[in-house]
Image (tube, rainbow, N blue to C red):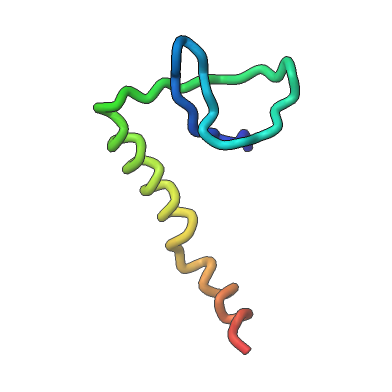
Length: 67
């Protein structure tokens, strides 16, 4: 899986909002999220996360954590 890093455009340059070490010459894919669509993207992400974390199949692992 490829990492997703928050960034913004300032003076025509893409500036990452978090420090990271990316090797020189690394190829990137940039997804532009218009401000008015930001909530749509966040809601879509939240829905996907709920499918991963909120499922009964993983409840068996919770029992292993109980002492």
